[in-house]
Image (cartoon, rainbow, N blue to C red; front, side):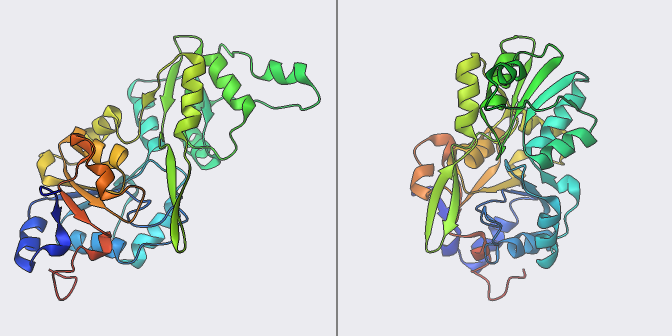
Length: 306
């Protein structure tokens, strides 16, 4: 606890020194700038905008590929934060980047949201049709989930409409060792604000665990914390010195662990999934700095401008 610096206790001079210690800001979205139900967290996006006005490069890095870009752009615009599409990084974008990098041209079975399916299709990824389920025709249902030899990759991300048929087909295809097994979001739980309390609801991770256990395969991960996401950031973002990059997040095993993997400075925000105490259980999840909410970043100043 003693080595974690609470930014709310910083003087204006100390805060200025902190702000001058990095050039790039990478921030999670859910739990940091807004709740998972899309309600904005007061002052959070404005804090990012203030850092951008200071000359910082601002990126949003999220495991949630169901976030509509238009919503994020609108929230950023209201806070005077200027974002282009390349400054928003999610699991599906990283998966597309990787498949193009390895020149993958075969068919894919994807358990993803409708939004993500559209992004994959627009990128030229060939998706097979989702399996159908027939409650009164067991023979037809079984036929739908038998291995499809044309499938050379299985992508599993968050899908509200996941069902037995999708799980069974993914497992059938993954029995072949030549099939790529790609996973996006692996969060065990999602944190939801239901005034006046925060509750945890089931995340996408346990469903990926079912596929992994029954197929005997371990997925290649593309979200936080993964080496491929780190490679994507190195390849596409202007990170020349990792220690001059500040990573902001609300989770221990995703955000803080990923920042440690990359060698970034770590700012933990207490408005989301984990508590500060939970981040201190492992060395690579322990943050360098702490704030109850990102909106309090400039509390040492009389105004939010530097």
